[in-house]
Image (cartoon, rainbow, N blue to C red; front, side, top):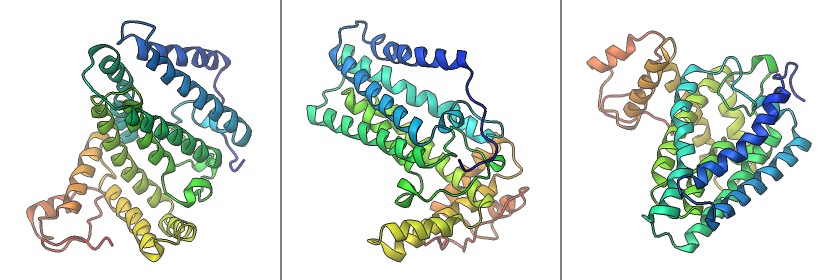
Amino acid sequence: MTSTVDPKPMSRTRAILYAIGSPLTLVALVFLPVGRIDWIPGWIFIAVLVALFSLSALLLARENPIIYRARSRFQPGTEKWDLMLLAVLLPAIIVEIPLATLDAGRMGWSDVPLWFVLIGYVLLVGGVAVTTWAQAVNPFFEPGVRIQKERAQQVVTSGPYRFVRHPGYSAAIAIFIAIPLALASWWALTPAALAIALLVVRTGLEDGCCALNFPAMSTIHAEHVTGSCRVFGDLRSRCVRKAIDLSSQLYGVCQGQSPVRRLLLHWLSFAFVLRPSWSAGSKRAKFYGKEPGFAPLSVKSRTRPAIW
């Protein structure tokens, strides 16, 4: 326990409904598009998921039981831009399953080799394992992005965080890819690609949010990641530090804006960093320099910012 004020537990009624409704929803997502209940690959997929998440739940109940409270709902103070992203991200994740089963179990649009299916299950197992590991060591692992001041939130550097800054997101990307492959569908990779793209945007915004509230985050992560993985040495350390600092700058663009404008300005700023074809004195630079709360990036005329 590392906090003084923990999230409220889920009510008994809600917990029972969740325990019953989740597997029933999964069965419906898998078999309704197929149109029959005797599709064997669907049952294999469900059995693997149930086994993985049951084992995960048992491990978390022993190692970090407070995580159930933290992840039971979106807590007060969750960033509005995050809720907007999740309004698109979560449906993209969910639609992977019925689209994949419709393809593989009914329409037969895709011809996926068996070894790709096996790769999908390997990614699925690995993704759930890494996510469980991250949740076991991180009591602040909530479904929404917010600064948990009431819980004395700290930067986590143990477990998988020694090797990668966002193990949960890295594992999520593996799972997004694993679901279509395990169900033998190429078409389901389309919503998976959308989910991955939105997750990358969310990662950048979250890094910026955290860096503004935890000024030493880039140094802490750089030191721990480098110390645990000497292969890349100082180069890896500089990359981690600069990536977080850049995210903080990009996040600064969004301060003082409405949620919709925040997302738009973040996309525009990110595009300027990757393809800076404007000078410090240009009309676009002057316009964005006048935006409330805008912290302009260090951009020279027609040159890339020094991010490395």
